[in-house]
Image (cartoon, rainbow, N blue to C red):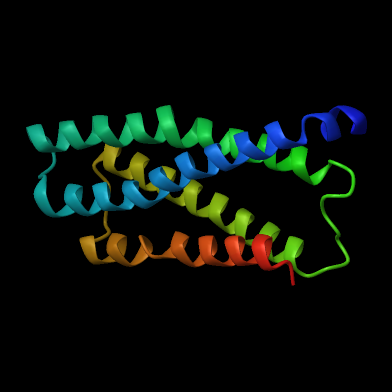
Length: 149
C-alpha cells in the first residue's frame, strides 16, 4: 500500500488542496447565509424558503463532499511514507485544527437543521462572529504545513 501512496503522492496532494479550497469556500459562505436568513427572512416567507434551498445545496452538494474528499486525500498524505514527521509539533497543530474545523462544519450543519425546524434562536451577530472561527483554524493549518515547526 505504501508504494501505491508514494506513487500517487502528487495526485493526492493536488486533490487534497482542491478539496480544501472548496470546503473552505463553503465554510466561509454558509455562516454569511445564516446572517441573511436571520436578518432578512421571516419564517415561512419566500426568502426563508429560498435561503433554505441555498443552505441545503451548499451544505449537501458542496461542503459535505468536500469535507469527505479533504479527509480522504489528507489521510492518504498522512499515510504516505516520509511525508509526516510526528515527532514535530506541526502535524499535531494541523490535526487539532482540522478536527476543530470539522467540528465547526458539524455545528453549521446542526444550525441548518434548526432553521429547517423554525427553531433558530441565534442572532445575526452570533453568525457574524462564528464566521471568523474558520479563519483562525485556516491560519494555523497553513502556517503549520508551510513552516513545519
